[in-house]
Image (cartoon, rainbow, N blue to C red):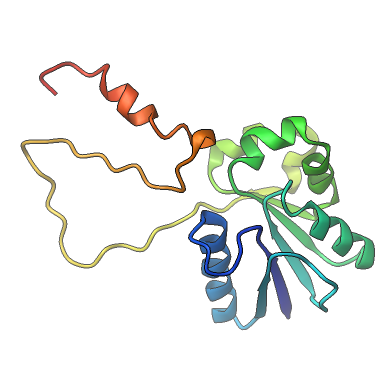
Length: 170
């Protein structure tokens, strides 16, 4: 089986969609599939298309569906498309309608989908690799680390603002 993974993040990007594409490709190759990662679908022969991000991958989704109406097409809602685009952007909405399956990356993501599409959706919880060694939490402090491709849409200062609400003794 040949699987094309479409990601809006270019090669060598450090964005989350690129890391997701690389991780999924590694897993799928381990299961015996041939996997190609591209920014845009350009007609390559593949048995399955996995598109990361409904709005940004719309041209690829539309072309693949038009050229291969019977082949499976999975749209993975990676974050900003799930919590914004699918409510307001016609292309993102069309991507959902064209998909054979939808994937959200955490359980509450299902609630963001239109009711009529939830039956096509599955949750695949993203993962991180366990660090080597033993972690011993500090007893004198509660440490928090905010990870991600931080930008305004991700509200990067939310954690710091929330910390202001903690009692001084914390």
